[in-house]
Length: 216
Image 1 (cartoon, rainbow, N blue to C red):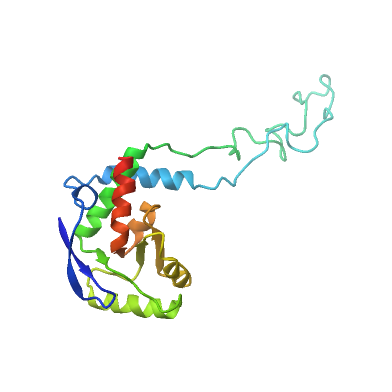
Image 2: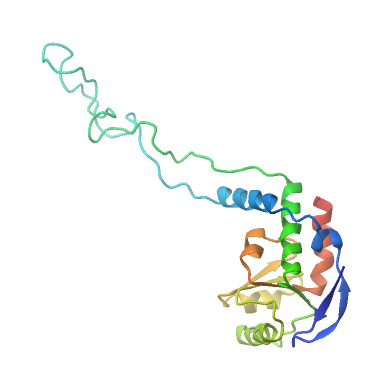
């Protein structure tokens, strides 16, 4: 499987052979991608709502009235769930766990499915290098604008996949609202799916193959 390699000016300067297992899955599995995304969103869910039971609500230690002789129903506490201001029965608690466990193999298949789908749609391109004279946001924004104008597959919201050595790009891209920079060793499926275009640095390709093919 071959694809074009572009320079930072958006011109095709050659071709590179991609690993078929990573970027060219014949049977893309959207159901596995859905499971991985659901698992990630569920695990990231922040549990806020938490109600109190009748044992946790303040007050209600004294019996409201005597057991017999009043003609009213028996009552042991004014903090019963039947009373206004009382505890809540079966209410939401802060110790709820929404995590969904998913194994490494499924995560890897989901990642390969997303990468294969993106390159199939022309939304993933390989760039040989993005050299910056200094880690400046303005300079990086200008280079990305050139790439977006000359490569049709790149949309407004970009994800750049880099090797661990390109720290200048990380600093320069922090203040760009529609640009996210990911390390090749820690790819995020949610971020890749939501991107309109993915730029993969050429030196990041062997890192992706080495790490994720090993996990599979």
